[in-house]
Image (tube, rainbow, N blue to C red; front, side):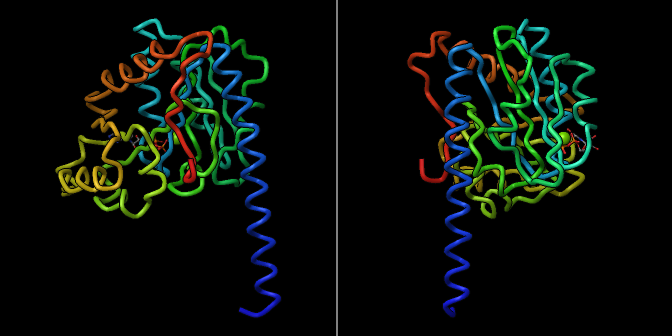
Length: 243
Ligand SMILES: Nc1nc2c(ncn2[C@@H]2O[C@H](COP(=O)(O)OP(=O)(O)O)[C@@H](O)[C@H]2O)c(=O)[nH]1
Ligand SMILES: [Mg+2]
């Protein structure tokens, strides 16, 4: 590498580090705010089309039946399509349009909460922008990082995107109704999940048939009741590569 290339690489690395440091400070402030209000937060990350929005709709319906007060922030590069779908079942729903950015950042969550009374919220679901790489570098102040993977995406994705799948506390397999149609080897996929993250909880779901939806809602509900309102004794499950 020549001197010019080396110095520009250092500049990019330094800039990247400053962006993440800035985001970490904003995420820490959010985490304190959520903690004080007793709001449990899940950050849902997957590739585009995995079925995040459809599953969020089903989970919101299930949570409403259980009396859990849910709010949703949903990120997208260009449209408010997802918020319009989710708002049909959850009135506290807002779209964050990133104008091309491939992930959500803590400052966007802060803006998205504007005007909401967190005292009215038990659980905040954040649907991240569809992307298996960048979103997992940006802490959003969540308690629970959830990685989703559809059976149409291939058995090897946990191995190809180890940062996301190794740092998620919960891994949700979606579109189980399509296992046979896709010729998906679900055992191999789950072996790959265990290889990359032996401690993760794995839930198989289908928004079409409804399998796993109740269990997913229940895992999220248990997470809420495990969180004390005064913010003491909280276990932060999410984490950056270096945490
Ligand atoms: N067969 C099947 N299709 C699904 C399921 N969940 C979502 N889809 C479809 O997959 C596509 C992408 O879903 P969407 O929720 O928008 O995915 P997102 O981009 O991850 O939010 C849509 O056409 C959905 O109707 C499922 O469980 N089974
Ligand atoms: Mg979506």
